[in-house]
Length: 251
Image (cartoon, rainbow, N blue to C red; front, side, top):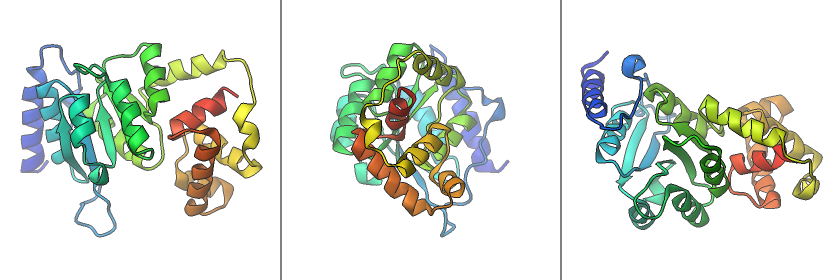
């Protein structure tokens, strides 16, 4: 472990231990080795904005991101109103969103952010695991949903997964999503507007495949997959893969 990683680990341990309602990250598997060096010309730095009302948690998350190769925290916001005014959309790849915010809640913040920038990636990071919160956040436009007990290494992996086209969820959350849609009545609706190829792409997305994996499965280029995904979004009137998959699973 290098000196910088060791320092980051010690700092995050102190911050998380001092959090009164513990931010229960399991630091025994920290630190995450991260992406290849961001200075490598072919590696994109993942830029993250944080919306979290607890100061210690914000600081710990910021240190975690900035102390891991391949990640950079570009902004932190103590509430939804601050994020809506100051979040640097052009510099942000992923937003980590808490749901329990002081005035406007995280779900409304997600909805408003997605209205302004439909392709912005939002991942919920919260203590809430009740079904109503989960589905409200996903319907608002979140593309991932992790609980705060998730180990920090997994949080970082989920951010990478999100940028590659995945929809990371804590297993308990994913189970609730599946159980919900297993009990929905079947309907066709907007799915009838999709072409056979678009349905094939959507089926692969529902399996959790990334663009690259879909391309390999269907023997088409990743750019063609992106075009199909864009068309699927337009026809289903959605703004994220998660929303598209929700409509597909509830067909």
